Length: 439
Ligand code: ATP
Ligand code: MG
Ligand code: MG
Ligand code: MG
Image 1 (tube, helix red, strand yellow):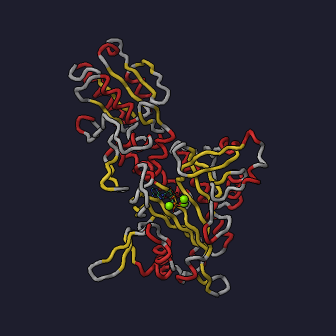
Image 2 (cartoon, rainbow, N blue to C red; image 1 turned 135 degrees about the vertical axis):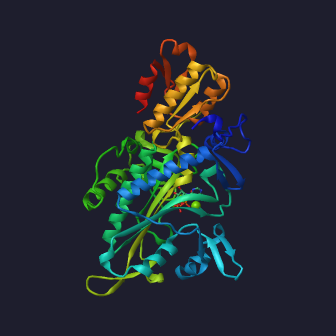
Image 3 (cartoon, protein in one colour; image 1 turned 30 degrees about the vertical axis):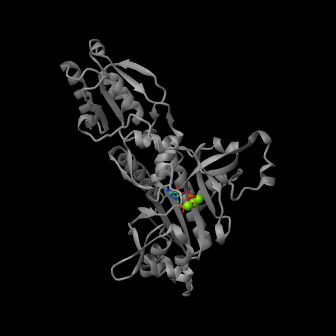
């Protein structure tokens, strides 16, 4: 992409409405525009990152054997009357009436719709296990939408639902989700710690929230510092292997890590004092096993091996796709702007032309630009007629991991400069070496 032909409405001034750094930087970098409270347009740069995050989520869900589909944003209120949640859900649900006076709602989550799909088409235990998921916009009429995309009213979520014959199988699905979430967040350059969360009225131990530690997080968390040494890394896992998935769950959940809702001061104090941490965190996902809570009232049953019909065991598993942009920026920025992890960056590298209009510099930039594209990378070429300082400031603000700076002085010795956004280190090398380094 050539910046001269792109749409990147960066702001020079700090927007007053932004209270936290990720919101401020997303506005300044021209990634989002608020349309009304908690509802955003995704401008081209923000949209690119959103799509990259979605792509990682899709890849990791499908790696775990989960199947994508797409459910609508608008749902029939009748389904929610069947599950008993229509009245319980309260003011967060946006209720709509159509011209025929039928009650609809903008889905805040999809347990009812997916259970309806399941009961219409699945009859036998032989079709299990089954996990279906989608990435779709949700609406929750949050009382206090704030912090930009972090707590929106309309937001993008991946939500997945498992259907299993037995509790044991459903817990395997739970573990599969835990493993796939660890991989997902790590690919985005994030450490998201699974923490024991509150099962709500259903109770039980089977829910974990994934939290990214950040001062601006809305959750209060307590954990054993040893947990931050864990990483999933690039180990191979067989998602069908129950024991393997269970072992990962045990490894990542055996140390104390809880949100304030489940915090147990007496247990916490059993950890050596120098390892006790209390901090703030951003909830970027949650997994849940809830048994037959929806399958029973909604009649989602299968014929079991003995010929009898039984309600299926279910769980639901969510990732806050749009919130993740905010969480990643909270975790990765400096005073000049965003620092994108390579896994989610909107462009792989920026090319800065220090002397637009100088024929040698222009053609060197064009050659690097063409070469990177032909090798499958997606560079952003700043070909505007701007001062070098302004170009650097834009690149720093939008946070591409690499910058290639091309000017007449360096080119006289066949040199360009390759700069890492994260370390700030610059190295001189030939244009072709710079291209090689980025591949
Ligand atoms: P929170 O505690 O922040 O209100 P939640 O527990 O109500 O979130 P879930 O129902 O667990 O949310 O939804 C799954 C994920 O969707 C959350 O872990 C979070 O990352 C994301 N999410 C929830 N509400 C919002 C929102 N208002 N804006 C953006 N993302 C959200
Ligand atoms: Mg909520
Ligand atoms: Mg929550
Ligand atoms: Mg939650």
